[in-house]
Image 1 (cartoon, rainbow, N blue to C red):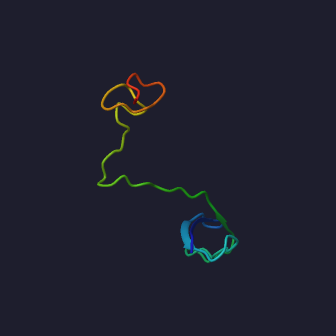
Image 2: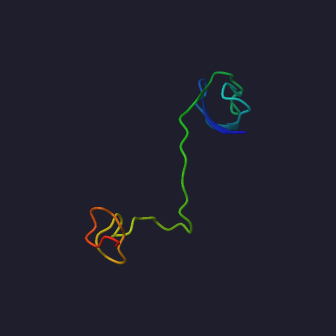
Image 3: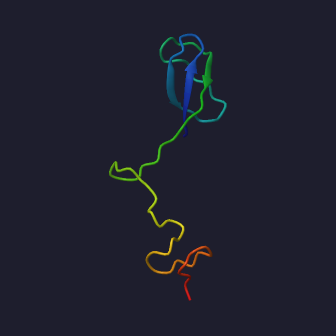
Length: 78
């Protein structure tokens, strides 16, 4: 089941709930109101170990290392 994010129209509490279908509208867990709106959900991607991911300096072929075969590279593969 997908996890959706909602906001209550009465008390404005943001909350998450699993829903069986896209059209499910749960009651607010704070005040019990049925006037809830699904909000835009975001996601995060882990690169592992909590380190910051960055592209290497030679990304896309800059002529360093073995020939990459990129058309704009100065060291095309034979």
